[in-house]
Amino acid sequence: GARLIASDADTARLVHLRSTFRGREGVEVRAPHELDALRGSVDLALLDVPCSNTGVLARRPEARYRFGRAQRRRLGEVQRSILERARELLAPRGAILYSTCSVEPEENERMVAWACERLALRAERESLHLPRGLPGDPMPRYTDASYAALLVPRA
Image (cartoon, rainbow, N blue to C red; front, side, top):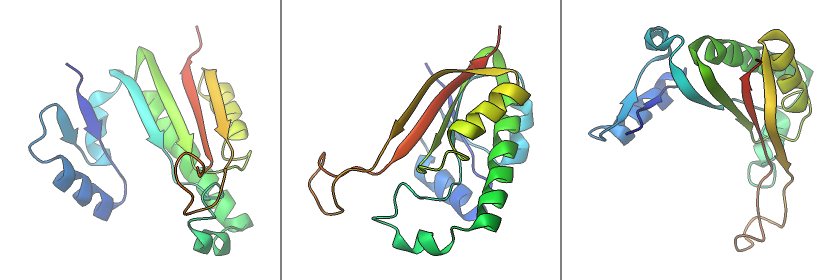
């Protein structure tokens, strides 16, 4: 009985989402500006935020050339904006699942600390998995890095 609403700020990815989920019962794809109607009613917001990709460098070596101070600053602004928007959409007992494929503390633990302080949230759970193995190794010997935090409104 769950209702899934998918969205992306990137037009090409939004088109791809619409194509992927066309005809799927219980799944809606909306542009970011269409999310206003959900304010205060979202039970779980899953945020796979744009990040530096430092946790997937073994598979995406080109990402290392985009990783610099200006890029980190820009990504931090985008991540904070996405968190602020998600907070507005949460139902009173809703939660945000924030995730990255980064190993950078400023995109992970520090970003969650910022959200807890500024957005009246608390981290119920956090998990950082470091990369393991080499690309091409069979699963589960090879895994990318990932970070996730479950954020809930402070009581």
